[in-house]
Length: 154
Image (cartoon, rainbow, N blue to C red; front, side, top):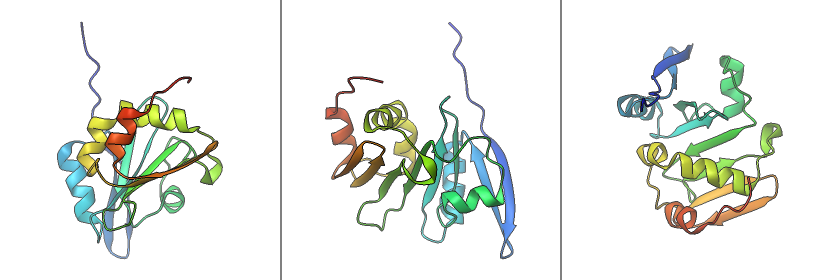
């Protein structure tokens, strides 16, 4: 059986304040480290679209701002995440701003489907905040919470 392999690529780039910023599509481990090194605090923001295509960039450029600088092919109202390790809740999944409407169950299923990738971004045992169209979760230990959560309907 053939397995579909996602190819990484620099999806887009821009220059701001004499700094070259890249947005990676389906990033490799090395590209994740490049993005972290391009952020003053080693943080990452990104989007995972409905086909599980992943886009990441340095977190100093917010989701709304990045869309003004580039032309991401997906609406930023889908699955948006940020990992900022110095924050009280390093993981942020904000699925309601910018017109988002994913539910908690949908968000948790996306997280479960992408645990391997997210573990390369940051510590899955960190605190997290998830804001969805049907509620909000603020908990410790993302990985533990996700593993115990039973998705019932999608």
